[in-house]
Amino acid sequence: MTTHLVAFAEGLVMGTVTQSKGGRLTFLYSDQWLASSGAYPLSVSIPLAPGQQGQRKIEPFLWGLLPDNEIVLGQWARKFHVSPRNVFGLIANVGEDCAGAVQFVQPERLDAVRLGARPEVQWLDEAGVADRLRALRQDQSAWRMAGDTGQFSLGGAQPKTALLLENDRWGVPSGRLPTTHILKPPTGEFDGHAENEHFCLELARSFNLPVANSEIRRFEDQIAIVIERYDRVKTGGTIHRVHQEDVSQAMGLPPTKKYQSDGGPGVREIAELLTTFSTAPVEDIKTFVGAIAFNWLVAGTDAHAKNYALLLGSESRIRLAPLYDLASALPYPGMHPIGLKLAMKIGGEYGLRNIAARQWRKLAVEAHQNPEEVLANLRATAEAMPDRVLTVQQRVEREGLTHEILGRLSDRLIARAKECQHLLR
Image 1 (tube, rainbow, N blue to C red):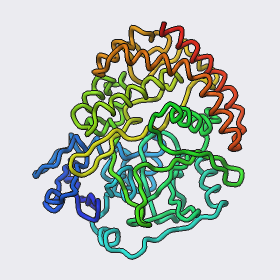
Image 2: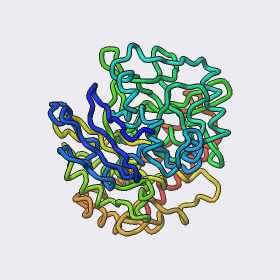
Image 3: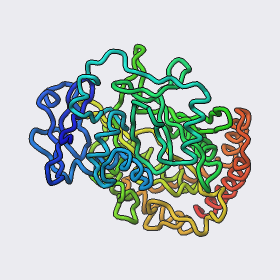
Image 4: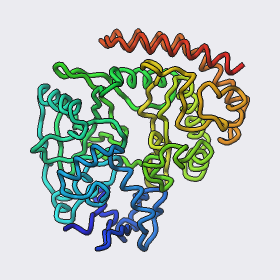
């Protein structure tokens, strides 16, 4: 049984994860990586330094790479014949394509990943992509199909798959070649979620917030939101991985503490994280506060710590990543602002209806921002929201989106914006 996993990045061995006979995990950076001019940390919670780093540091990071979904973890555990609580065993099977730049490779696979010729790609036609989306809607653990050689893992709770898009062809990559796009089909009771997420991402973009690129695509009778991975870039015809980690990982916290009410970070803690590590803390904190404001305005109730991330580069270059997983709770049955709560407190309050100008002033102080400037920006955004909503609705409908959720979402966002204008007086 594998007791070591090689952390591989930028063509180098970054380090080694070791599992003892008793199941304890440690991580050790390689001398080669520590000496590299392009080195960056696996996580800001696991600083570049010689010597072993213990389970309390490496285990939360590894859990953060896996789906935050017990059903998916259980299915994977049965498939790979490991315990669903064995993070090492799970990563050993799916760690060659994770969020960020680092691949976790079994030692016997290292040469194939490092030195292999052109990696194998299983190319898919439209029917092949549709089959995968269909399977995901029926079984949320079906991230890969039987017979696939390439495996991947992504954090988060929603069912999804990740594919390579190259020269207008979709494929399942393996080895060194990464996936480039995430595909998320509509699921369960939240019909229209794909359209909702795309709409909210485009709405945030209209307010100059940095967001992941997305589009709605149809494959036969299946629909999905297709998100371009911001942790992948193409230069000179080659796709490169870019390192990133979510805020929970950066703070050394497991996914079970992604919500502030479960012991996760709030605005003050994340602002301190950005102050400590960001290369441009003033700009990044302003963006973060803008994201908190946007989620309050649209009733984005799932904006927890795993839905914010850092990009990590060499020479300690660290920035807040583009926003992702934006969606409104408003268009769904029973989701009225009077009963909705946010994932993070604003000025000591979770409830949408309990948050007004006083709470925003308190948040501004927590985030080291000028309270009157924060309020002025928030009021301007709320004032502009109705027109922006209508503009985005018209654009996505011209692009071919027809789901009934769009009209309902637009109406409720406009009503919510007017309510927020009143709350901010």
